[in-house]
Length: 212
Image (cartoon, rainbow, N blue to C red; front, side, top):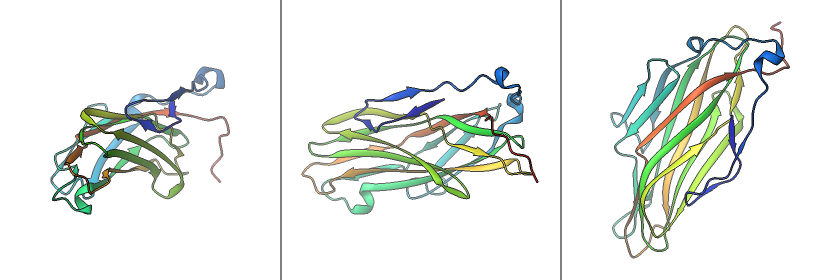
């Protein structure tokens, strides 16, 4: 499980690798992959209006991707504040065995940026579980001008949640946005998010609690 410990600046990634304890040393057996699955993925926001976010979940129900065709921002002559910033809330409904904890191990945003002198493009994503906003994990990539190329923001999220007693589902919310600053520049700049994808796995911890 990887935890990103710094902001991603102009494509540079600083990461730490943390290896979880082996399950066979703790005396527990992790559930088979078929027991953990993505039920559905939805998207809503100014960058992903209805009909412009295309969701695909693979046959194993553990890997997904969302493609966009209107997640685009621009700044410079002839643009407004609303043109320079867009957002998209992606909600992932997960099902897993009661008593287990899971985490999202990796997500990735990919897109394209064309930034003129003096502009900065930003891709940001905050991860929370519905009903618990206290452990939000935020990742951000800043792209400095001049820049004209594809980009990606790779995040080892490490957000964790216990299933409730008697419950076997949880919803992970990814609140994303892209923006270009400043808005008023002599030359035009654009930035997109083309796709978002990720995978899940199950982990467990030693302080198990009994349902009462």
